[in-house]
Image (tube, rainbow, N blue to C red; front, side, top):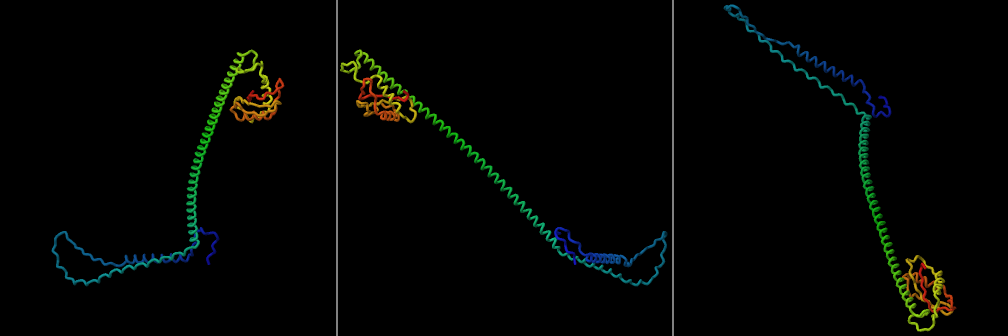
Length: 314
């Protein structure tokens, strides 16, 4: 009974076979060698018959005696042909050893390990290729995002620059418009002042001390009109009631005609000369409505109709 193999010896060398088989093979090999040597020696030691003839010659010529007549020799038996050398028996081939299951298991394990290593190598190459493709795609994505970001920043920058230019253009137009309006108002004021100056000049050229117009037909020294400071007093009383929600561009003048009852109660009002700013005109009208009653003049009377002028910066 062969000893039980130790565990985990798949890769150990095979155990030596029994000595009986080796001894039998050695005896058979020596017997065959001895037989071959014997046959070779026997063939070389067989007797062989050799026939030879010789002739004798003399130094001086002599007559030969008559040949002795001998009986013919008896025929010799022919030598037997050498026996053929026996062929050596073919050497028996030793039976192939039975396959060791441990060796087969080891070979299978080695083949399996090689297959696993080859699969791991292919898997690693596949992963490396996928990683390279992924890195390449990521690099392209980053470059595309960078280009998109640069384009977006450029578009934002161009948009801000355009908006800034538009605002500056609007501001410039507004300033030009304000300047033009201011110039127009100044021109209108100058024209009004010229007209007033011309009117005063004509009045001065009339009767000294008369207050009527150039077409007046009365004989009194002064007309029954308001005093020179009465309009300013009314404007000073109305202006605190003006509420305007914002800044007025320039200093426009709004002229309002107000009709008043004898006791000073305001009956009606209307714009006779607009300032060009509807909001300022409406603010002046609301202030007049809020005032409700005008004070009496120095002579104790209130004119029935009076024209008042209002400017934001007066």
